[in-house]
Image (cartoon, rainbow, N blue to C red; front, side, top):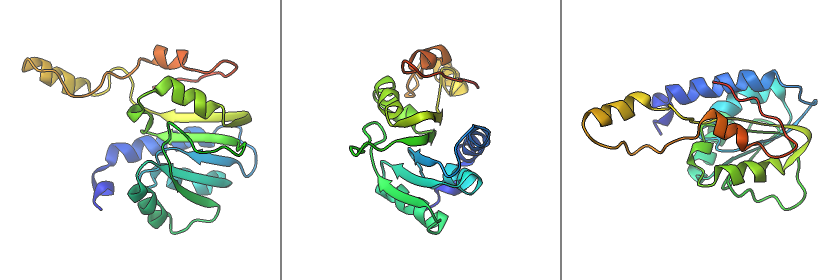
Length: 176
């Protein structure tokens, strides 16, 4: 219930990603799949701006319910509890945009997940995500090292490693 009060970084990242996505050449009324909606930061930052038909998902049914509550049943938005690593679309669904803000760092098989999600893109579609990368939590790691301890934070991939995960036939624009 108090997540939004403390999630300042998550909100900022979602807003920045939303501005980037809004600059993409999307078709009118795009079909959008959001992975890891949380309480709705990215959806709120973008849904009114680009419109379209949204499928908003999260692994947590509670987060999906909270997102629905925050968006107050926005038109064109459908909600689904789903594991973003293993999307449940078997009907040939294709999306013009698949987006995610700070969810991919939780994936066990990031490369495989990117490939699976890339397979759901319509021709000319975009996969836009913000995730943790090498160097994230640098101060945290340094503080632990200074104490002779190992931080319980995973090692995130470098931007070069993320670039290598780009499926064949697709291009990547990886920035900071």
